[in-house]
Image (cartoon, rainbow, N blue to C red; front, top):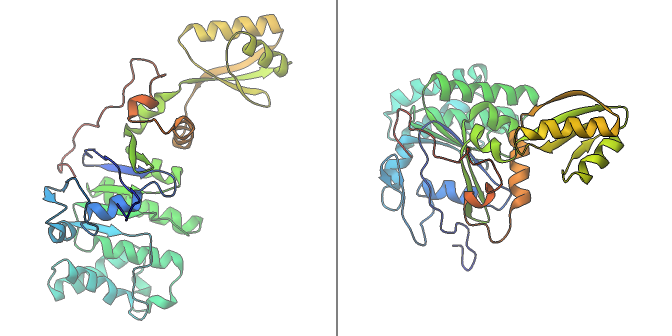
Length: 322
């Protein structure tokens, strides 16, 4: 709590190792959750562990073993990049000489080899973000926590940042907890999501499983889209239409037959009909649209999905839980 304001409310979750995205609208409690996991904010009540260390009493041990790339400006403008990164290594307990050697290595890794002796005050936004990433990975952490890592970056810099994070996580076999409002970024890096709203956990699981919340059929209509839309509504369906393309919720296999029957009665052509693969942004919008003040768990959000789908914790991967 911040005074009378409840930032995280009865949050109970377990996140396995691997690549996980932390999602939610502005003010949902994402940054508070990250700072709590790092031991930078004391809990009003409750408890938790990161990599086996207590977030109440062992914050120093946690911060030595994780890399943190915050959203806010955390660099020293008058320092050059190599000494800034070296300093961050020393803060985690690294020997001064080893920290300097590693600083050169990671700055090359993030694409700043030729700018490492420049003052940070002269850096572009992309270079500053790359420096923050170098600071976060200098000690080869088991877990990398990134808060909006592509914030303010142009297309080229954003692509390079995502490629670098992909290498750290997928090729380096490290875990990441990534907070981002850009759904495309999340899908490129993460396999699972944790979604919070107003300080409460509202959904957790594999992205591919959560996308089954609403299974839709996408239909391309020719020669009377308005008649087809009317026919669907009269039959009890709720089509979402964009020009000649419509989507309806797939109740079961009979939905396809019903669509074809309605098309025949409306005397329109079905040029194409297939299962629609929703994006993570579609998923986010569906969940946010269903949110009410009475939402208590993921089950409340998934009550209309087919019974064969469930939001289950992802299987454990090497590296333990955090």
